Image (cartoon, helix red, strand yellow):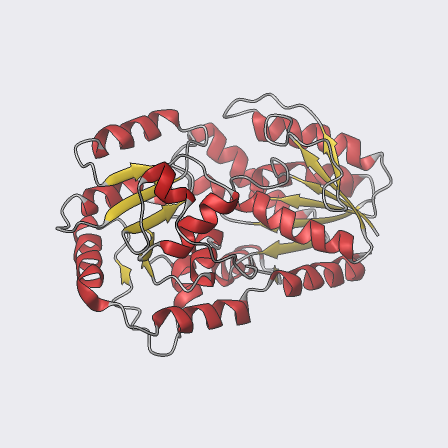
Length: 370
C-alpha cells in the first residue's frame, strides 16, 4: 500500500511528539512492505532520505509561527493528491484542515489527532478559530479519525457523534547508559537530578515547576531539557526567572545518547503540563523505570492510573498549583519513592504502549479504509 504522511515537521525525530510518533510507525510500516512517504520541512529534516526504508519528500514552508504548518500542509496535500497514494494520513488539527481536498478528489484519508491544539496559550484568537475549524475537518472529511488518548476519544465521540479509533503513542526498549556524556557536559551524576523533557511553551507548566523547585530544600538539581517552539519570549523569561537558582540547568534540545543518559540516570521525572494529547516524554521516562510526578490532567492520569502498589495521590499534584507540586516533590525526594516503583511502572507501559502493536493496528486500519 502506498501511504503519505502529512503534518509532521519531518523525520528522523529530534524534537516533537508528533514527529516521534510518525517516525516510529512509518519505519515499521515500511518494514511490513508498505511504500511510505513522509513529507518533511527542510529546516527540520537535514538528511536527504530515504530513512530506514521511508521516502522523505522535502517541500518548503513559510517558517513563521502562523504560516509554517499551513503552508507546508497545503503544498504537501497538492503533491500527495497527484502522486497516486492509496491513503493520505494527516497528523494534528492544523494539517487536518486540508483533508477536504483529498476527500473531494476521491482519495482515502486518515487523520490522527495528537491533542486539542487550539487550547495552547501561544495561539491568538484567529489562530484558535482556524485550529477549531481543523478539528471539525478532522471529524468530517477523513474516512477514519484516530485519537491517541482515551480522553480525546471521549471528546470526539461525544462532540461529533462518531466512533473514533483509539491508537495511542508508544515506547520501545530503552538503551540504559551510564552518566558519561551528561557528567562531562552538565556536571550531572546518577540520581543527582530530577528531569523535565519537552518544548518550552506555557502549557508545559515549566513556570510552575521552576517556582516550586526554587522552594524545595535539596541538593538535587532540576534539569529542563528542551527548547523553544515559536516561543522564544517565553523561554527567555523562564530562564531569567530561574537564573537566581544555580541548581536549575537548561540543556536545550537533546537527542540520542545524551537524552538516553538523562532519562536513565535521573532520580525522578516530572510532567507538570496543563495540556497534553498522550505525553510521549512521560511514556519514555516510565520505560526507563523512572518514577514520575505528574500534573493531574486526564491525559497524564490515563498513563499512570491503576498501577499496583503506586499511590497516584502521592505521584500527582493539582495542575498549575506550584505549592502542591513543591510539597509532593519535597516528600518524594525525602524518601517517598517505593523501591519497586520503577519495576512496576516499566512493566505497565510496555504492556499498554508498544510501537510494534501500534504500527500493526495502523496498518489494519489502512486496509479497512482501502
